[in-house]
Length: 494
Image (cartoon, rainbow, N blue to C red; front, side):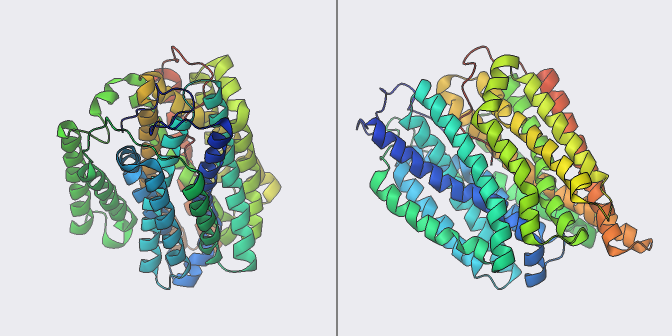
């Protein structure tokens, strides 16, 4: 995803039209509003998962697809969306992404079958990928290097974290007072407002010098590979781990991954230039992102189920339980993370943050079937909020520290993509482990709450191990940034 924004005069878009400071900040506000809708949707659904499961008859392992259908297409097509924006115009692609996301949100809200909901969620992921990629691209265009970009990125990270907090709370309110369908239908008025304002206020922009090639084959190959791998894992218990179906799908996923690598090595304008991975910080930060995403999505998914199915919380109570961690993440995104990086560098905040997260997951793993909020939920949420807040920006800053400024957007986009892909595959594995452990506990005579708790405990322990391993790799292998201290990352991982 080539960028042609770094050397533009201050305030000038790629069309050559110089924007006033007021116009730039108005456009920035629209981009934030559009991306809030995407972030809100990624958190709002977690609170409603048990209600969706009951309404449409999902099993616990099948329920993973409500989350993963979104993550897979989002991660698989985010870089392609940014590339298309460079070629065909950022405002046009942003508007298309908003329309796709809003229309598929309506389809989610009207879904009457499992298949309809999962397909609509996958289409939502496509729209969300385009909106997020274009928002990043346009912000980089609107604010060339300097104090204004630093300020804009700080605001952007804070707004995104705030969107997560609002999503969790709003999910509880809507699901508890109306119905799970309302968590998707709420996107309709927001999407309509964003489309109207973007049409009037966003500048057009494209890279005239960029190659016209689009690596659609690469995006399809990597998404299909992960789709098959996730499907094999999610259905492994039912089909049999050594069955022809499971082994065949895993083999096909590996073949498609190899095809993706071949494509990226030969195509004119690859989504992921493989040469970047010769840079240590790029490689390490992507591995750290995959491991941390597996732990984080297990936290969101399984803790919501634990609170509702084991502790008997209602949707509103679950929303409020997540609120402290989201508020802490917002505070770190706004200013604390940048201050810690300025003082301590990249490695220590990242390692400390991931170790805090590992501790929070370990506490969840030890929570009993009759757990209480104050003793077993709140401490875990606080630790996970601190950990996520400390670790997110250092991961992205590490990825960008080894590349030229013109490639910083690409580097952070690759880590975001790895984060989504790692999250989807990690969630499938951990949810499957939880289901296996739950089934075993039931067979040994445990009650349903005890069996569910046993299953979630196994998954949380594995998630804690992933976070601890990520902390060790980041703390030992990452190199400190040689330049640009204090500049926040171009995008927070959603």
